[in-house]
Image (cartoon, rainbow, N blue to C red; front, side, top):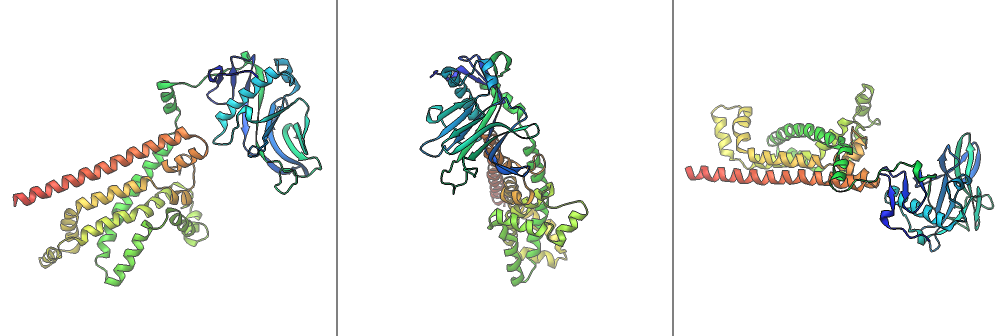
Length: 430
């Protein structure tokens, strides 16, 4: 077997091409299909199938039973590959091809299982039909006009990928691409160091940041107004009504965000007359940008409300009553006394609510979905990028959220210290 060093193989930055210093050929137009399908085509059943496009002259490698003690792969080398120096009987060329495929597989795995070359038994063939035990593989099968597939069927014509089949084969994935002369393949290796960082930042999609800021800033304005009004209003209610509405306003803080999102989806979706009304006028409240604002307002509102209510309840009631005896209206008392005396708590509640809205995930995912540039906020982007195997992008957005959170906490500490010093100075002056 040919020995390879990591530096011997260069993988193009898009992950679709690779060449090696030890090979006269390379791979282009590479693709890794994580899953196939098990369906009929034009009324006929062909078994488990992978679509490989409109070119029948692609190499194909199907990996099977990867989680068992006997993992194997069937590598189909089309006859056309002989012209560029790849023959099934040429162990050296086949070894080079395996290693090139492995490096491209690692690039495209998205977290999927990619076994080492030496851990898999390879069956190499140029025949379009190849049998491993009771499993019959067919390569470059034209099942539709101009569309080619790889198929897997049991020798008896049944679905051998079914867990109930006595000779069950569990398919891992299928990799395929074109084998070409190395000189015919243009490969741009990945940048390193500062160049890699600059390239990463230039290619980043910053729409989650803009969606997040737009959503959070809009939500915090609504939360600020509603929080002040709700806290002021609830103080004027009888005790029983006070307890009921206080619980109602606070409950989103203790419910899981996914539950809040699910309830909002039920309330604002097309199954209710309220939600259907907005759909009919062309302003749907679900799976749209307004849904991100609604989700952020609902989950972050209790933080603002509780801070403001606590500050209002801590005010000297005798002072407020004295203002009433002087003929002050309730609005003037609210504006001239309650707001200025409670401002530090109001500011802290605003900042905390902003931070909570900034990091909202569960309710937003349920109510708004994941539409890039529209509803995909930073927390949702972290989740989707990680699930898609783009860990670097997920880490970038995680760092952004951490920085925002640090700034929020630092601001709260600074504001608290400043307010405390101000009050101490006032008491000293008196």
